[in-house]
Image (tube, rainbow, N blue to C red; front, side, top):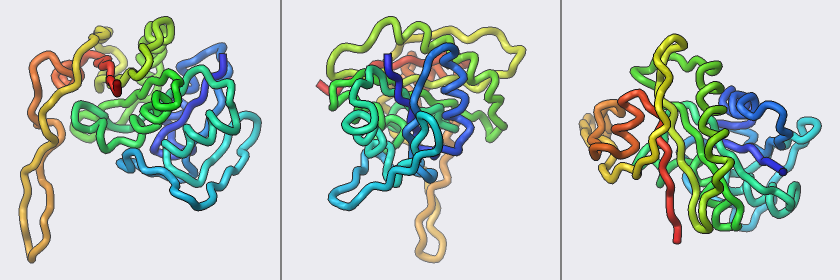
Length: 227
């Protein structure tokens, strides 16, 4: 099985190494942006050239977006790809986030290309640092489950890991819908400049949906359906 790993934080981000470490004994190629592109959504190159920089055996830094990385990987570098895994994003991609997230866009593009995909993100609580060893352990747990049950055609998995300490109780894996509530919209206007001031951790949430599940200390697993 050929696995392709990508992200939107860039090839040098610690999250993609945590994702790689969550797949012990499996060979996975890394095809990721050559720079951080968080929040780029599903942008793609529309006619220009895309640089491909080999970083060594099975690793490529791409001069494009996460969706471009998926296209380059699946159509050119690894046409035998069986899974595209994106992340692990430093920060949650919950509910409405999936529409702006480059992490999620990478697996949405894979889904459009008829390749199953999983997007993984690590929620950050109150700006606390991420313990990537915990993230790796939780990611391995959820990947062990989901990769035995590929999503149906036209669908992909969006996973968010809670921010828990190393000695915290083991979080449950909860399959749940994506939250329908908007991102915080509180704002100020100073000198004619509009600025959002809402706190991500105080966002509205649907009971039992992914925001509620992840903020409650559990792993949210949401199936996103394109058709």
